[in-house]
Image (cartoon, rainbow, N blue to C red; front, side, top):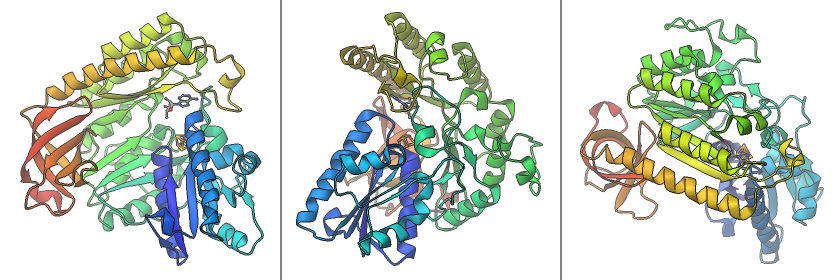
Length: 456
Ligand code: 5AD
Ligand code: SF4
């Protein structure tokens, strides 16, 4: 059986798709890149905004239609939309064979078998308090790898579908995380990203006994900084990252471990969402603009060269011109290296969906464009400062747009494009002189490979 997986959404989904590939490979499936060849096509869906759901739905309908030329082809949905929409998904995508929620992915092989026996369609979603099994497999590990540390979210932001899509916050046992990380590192990964909706919540709802056998060389007590410290001790990790973050997680202990652990990268993704305290309150974000500012100041004053990136929602219910201007001026003050801007979209079963979506589509579009332009100016200014400097780049592969160019990332997460050099045949760590800067991309020349990288 040949299977193809199509992924929408965030790094969590990218990670889940990879784990699903490993699971299917282990059951004797072949994973194919070309969907036309596949007997089973799995769409990993995202529910974060309406257009993410529409894209996945359009794809599912197209695939179901393609059965005319591929009789017997199995088409299923996994991920956030499967969990959120449940039965409704089978009426919206008529002919769908299965839908499996993010916490039930371990059942995928048996669900496919059920469908093959003609006993479908199958809906397999987690009912809130049920225990679930996390997938820990990785397929075709490259130099970068994601490891999930916290699943779901219990924070309760009023706009967010994640609790409905991924369930309440659950931390994975530290031993599972360490074992999984060791295995991806021994398979060649050097750049590890720990994943969670809010990673610093790690262990806050789990007994601290999970750390009993681990001493903390830095004398740390909080679970997430201790986890970061324990993971960083695995030999072979060159770069350690973690996403996503919340200002409440920016504790002195987190800053200590970032500062004293050479592999922890100088980058933090810290979603702001809005620069208006009134809107932050309505969003139930649990911090004020002043507290966010304080978190960034504490980070920047301890970690030289730190890049800060963020997420912003424009057009949240009741957002006025003055709320919007507060966001713009706060962004100008902070000077983010990069930001991801989203137009608010009401999500079913969230608190904010009960309020009128009263900012017009047109205003959302205008506000989105204005912030993108602001960010481009700031991003360009920050990136131009790197021109003439040598930076360490983990070159991951050929550039998507031009195969004579290679693409990689700095420790701060910035994309760098370099011309191919003869000594480069695959992923490698290199020192690159930056020659040109764009708002989101740097261009440079390889000066030398870093001898100690161990990945040349
Ligand atoms: N509408 C628009 N953007 C949203 N996000 C989350 N929920 C919504 C929504 N309902 C954005 C937030 C989050 C990012 C992943 O997606 O900015 O940080
Ligand atoms: Fe990721 Fe959220 Fe989309 Fe789920 S709904 S894939 S958690 S962005």
